[in-house]
Length: 232
Image 1 (cartoon, rainbow, N blue to C red):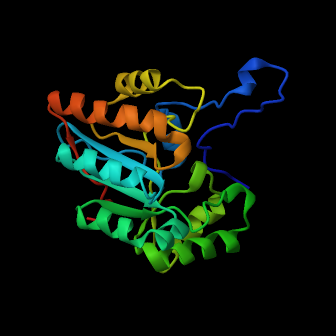
Image 2 (cartoon, helix red, strand yellow):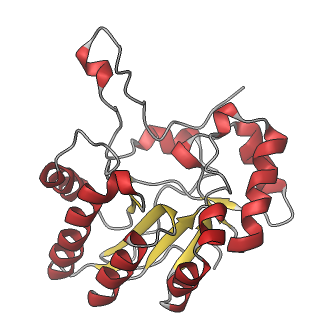
C-alpha cells in the first residue's frame, strides 16, 4: 500500500521527547517529493510574478467573509477547497465565493483521512461532497490519500485533478506565533507557488494575521494572486 506524503505529523502530547510534542511539517514542499507523485499538482507554471492562494475546510460563517473581504481589497483571486458538509450548512457563503470570481474544489464531505478510510468509502464521500461543490479539483484532507484512492479519482467519471501545495503556512499550529507564521511563509515564496491556509477556528489567529500582510507585501513586489485552474 502506497501513501501520498502527509499534510503534517501530528503532535504526540504524551511523548517522551519534546520535539515529538509539537506538530512537524515542511513549509516548502521538497522537489523530490513532487517527483515521487507526478500525478498531483504541487505548483503552477511560472507566468511572471503570480501566486496561488488556497483555503481548506470552509466555508465558515465568519472566517470566509473575512477572507473574501481581504481578497477583494487587494483585487486577488484564490481557490477554496470546501468540505461538502460545510457547504450544506452555509450555501450562501459558498455562493458568495463563486460570485466573487474564486475557484472552488472538493475537500471530501466529512473531512476524511484517506489513510484511515477504505477506498470505497473515501470515493463515496467525495461523490457526496460533489453534490454540493461541483468541481473537478480535489485536495485530500491532511494531504493523506492512498495511491489506490488517487488512481480511483483519476479513473472516475469526472477525472478529478488532485491539487496539493508548495507552501504550507502551518496556520493550524497553535504553538506557532502569528508573526513567525508570516515570516516563515514570506521567506519561502517563489512565483507559481500554491499556498495553503485554513478556514477554521484553530487557524484563525495565524491566518488572519498572515493573509493581509501577504497580500499587501507581495502586491508591492509586483505579484498577482490568481485562482488555480488546472483544467484549461
